[in-house]
Length: 111
Length: 115
Image (cartoon, rainbow over all chains, first blue to last red):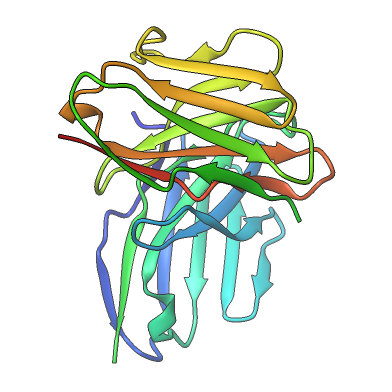
């Protein structure tokens, strides 16, 4: 079983749509959770951290369910510029440990 | 925020040659640098963890004699792909955690093509 699993996608949605991505992680020792965005042939960029209480940043909302080991990302009012690959990422402790990446979910927002 | 400079951004080399990739932390000291590899349409896979002043830790299946890592200072880590083959063609990227609390930062990546 892979450590971080995501919906494979691709998701093709019209502008203005709401889209949700899901992710599960297998390591119960995971402590920190993130969503990253990666554009084609570029490095990943942090979109947002994910907290148990849930958090929102503009059109983006992230949720974490530790009991189910499940993470989600909701994007409202999709923009063309949201087209990218969204990576679910976890790390084991709050110390200096590497990030573990999901395979990513490709989103294409269509005009 | 934290900045990691990685170069070269793109390199094409012949089979059998070696390629060195450098990552420098510009405004913080990186005692640890993580090296990842990403094949097309695949996730970033951790190759190794480099530690300043000591030997790197390699993930299972990564040949330490082929992927030489040197972390000689608190601001520089290098990855050398030795005797490169076409199957080594990939996107290589480094990452470090800024101890000042800015989280993880990535280099801009190196796209290696071995012909």
